[in-house]
Image (cartoon, protein in one colour):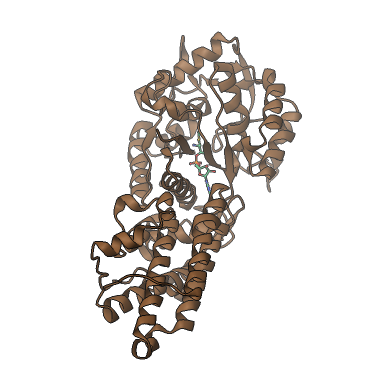
Amino acid sequence: MADPYYITTAIHYPNGKPHIGHAYETIAADVVARFQRLKGRDVRFQTGTDEHGLKMARKAEEQGRTPRELADEMSGYFRDLFDRLNISYDRFIRTTEPEHHTASQALWRKMEANGDLYLDRYEGWYSVRDEAFYDEKELVEGEGGEKLSPQGTPVEWTKEESWFFRLSNYQDKLLDLYASQPEFIQPDSRRNEVMRFVEGGLRDLSVSRTSFDWGVQVPGSEDHVMYVWVDALTNYISGLGYPEEGADWKYWPADLHLIGKDIVRFHTVYWPAFLMSAGVELPTQVYGHGFLLNRGQKESKSLGNVTDPNVLAEQFGVDALRYFLMREIAFGQDGSYSPEAIVTRANAELANSFGNLAQRTLSMIAKNLDGELGAYSPAGDDKALLTTVQDACHEGLPQQFEKLAFSTGIEAWMKAVYACNQYVDEQAPWALKKTDPERMRTVLQTLFIALRDLAIAIQPVIPEKAGHLLTMLGIAEDARTYEDMADEGWYGALIATGYRVPKPDPLFPRLELPEAEEAS
Ligand code: ME8
């Protein structure tokens, strides 16, 4: 039985259409999910939409419709985008699903039974945009002297009856958790921030609202709906059927909650405290990635620089976009994108290097060898190249991907691609065609063998193109895992079937900047 692996993204607020940050996070999670599948893990990958709360209620009101209408429409855009980006999610959860309500109420009852919930009055600051309560001392001053949350969003004074969660009781337990499981919060910089926050003292948390009703009803308290983060975090277990421990419960605890840096506190302070209170095992790791910026700036409607990720996918192709995002930015840190940067990176590494390598190798085999490969007897140079490629594909890339260091992993892989191109230039198989056709055959065979590992290894990042290349290489769909890379007998087996390499179609056409971009 394969070892279960459970990865989740944040669930996204469908108060508007998805933006590039949503695409970035979900692509990164997809790379991990595909990577773990290729390693043989039994992967469960969950994403979805976070549909309750005041932010949704207000946005719907502004538009003169119900929150449900807004959620239904916008959630559809998220799903469509993720399908278009080739996101291999197993479960797309919506927090308005009745099963999710049941699960949230079950978790609530457990926390209540543990003595961690009490009724009182909340009086303090609330940011609707962050859906977060803030202490006075955390607030910052805006340009006009107004009070803002530490994220720079408006806050409003809120006063109402509320249920409270005894977060203050969990301070020591949380500090013990961070100390005993240093991997629980990653990267380390985020871990340090959270530790400082918790060491500073924890106040009990307001966990229900009475001033609106768009949420999960608090069991036994008709006038209260749960604070949106309580039900939102519960998605990670409701999506597995909680409170029933059915067939999908084997995936809990999650191996990785992949989220952005702005919501680390919710995932590493509140969430483990809720789970401890309810007697549910804790996830293994929360990873807070960095933010994606548009030419160094945060996207916002007022700056007029909001980019629809669908348009980027359309302009540059899904795999080029995925590749760019994983390659350009050191995961964990903030990073910038622009059409120029996408075009430059994709042309240099995909079109000119990897694509060109595949294209020239397969065309020469199709043309000069009539597609027939034949038995292989490599010389020293050939073996050396294959060792370089194997080191990168069997170890370099996977070791880095395991640590979510996508860019460094791809870089290791790209170095092997460069080595192959250098080998082609040095060996000049086109010249060997007349002088030494047997040697030409060996060179082309070597490249063919190298391409198979290169294509298998990079599948998590560019699944469609790598898959297409593997098909052109004659590799069966069930022989494309990382374990398959270690199989030495595959080439002989392929030759035995009489496989003929087809004339290839180009994998990565050179990209051009869209006209509007050129003019600017
Ligand atoms: O926070 N770059 O939803 P959300 C990279 N519903 N990532 C970004 C980003 C950017 N520019 N902007 C946002 C919520 N994100 C809650 C989560 S989970 C139980 C509830 C990331 O739609 C952000 O950090 O505002 C978060 O991980 C995800 O996108 C969804 O953000």
